Image 1 (cartoon, helix red, strand yellow):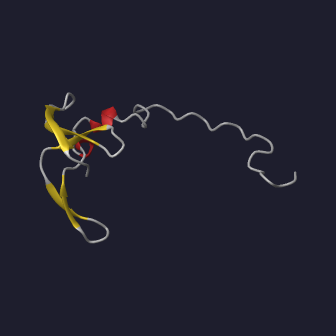
Image 2 (tube, rainbow, N blue to C red):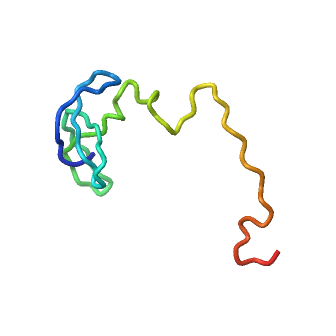
Length: 90
């Protein structure tokens, strides 16, 4: 859950109404309009909005870190001799 909402908008990907807010680092963050109550690991009950990415029907298509379906991952680079031997003699 993130900070104070700044304005209402429509998600351009799924058409759902969202609220825009700023993260503590100043980045724009789309949030759900509905306020929810959740319990933290420390047992506190917190009321706030959850990230729209958790609910957007198009979220899987928008993720940058996942390769497109059916795309093979590249092979790992070959080991470099001496790599990882900081402070050791060969």
